[in-house]
Image (cartoon, rainbow, N blue to C red; front, side, top):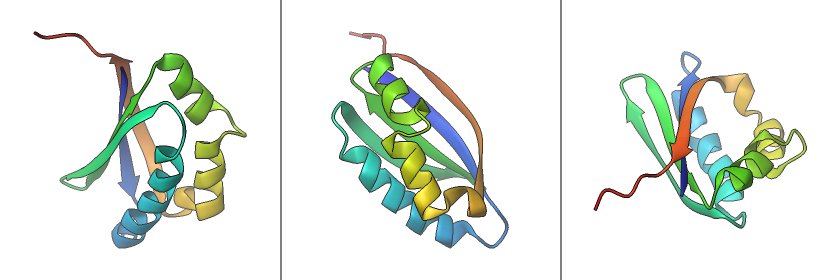
Length: 97
């Protein structure tokens, strides 16, 4: 599985709106083939999301395509009007046992 952990920062006073819109964007992404998991959590003032994809190619096709479902949902819902993407870390999972 290909895992991505992304950090977002809601603009001041926009935290609740970010949570609401983030759920709407997540619904779109979760419905795509090859999305295996999608969770979020707060880490202090940071908004973190954890995504699991079938493989890196699926991730790139869904998230990095400027006309793909993620980019369209972010634009349609106005996510970047209320928050900014800070960074992401990603990689293939490692079997631990």
